[in-house]
Image 1 (cartoon, rainbow, N blue to C red):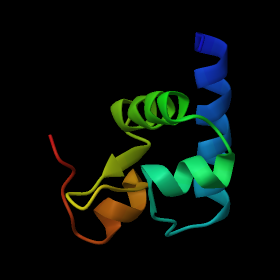
Image 2: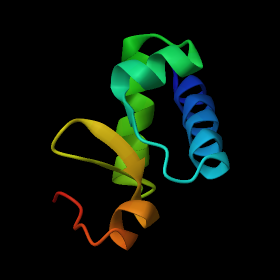
Image 3: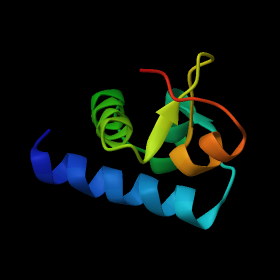
Image 4: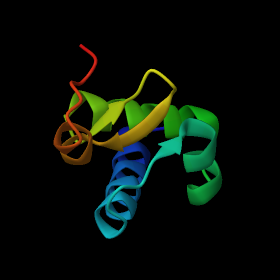
Length: 77
């Protein structure tokens, strides 16, 4: 897995979240949706969390940071 693969996966994940407001996916669900291996999906999701695009809930779901904050939640820090 290289940086370009991670960047492409991040871009695909971001587009899915932009097209579907309120989307909530676990890592296995994101893997299935995108058809990517676990290590690539984990790296892409982790990068989107570090970049404040997504937030991971205590239940392991990934949501857009804006939707999570709008619902009155605080991101895990």
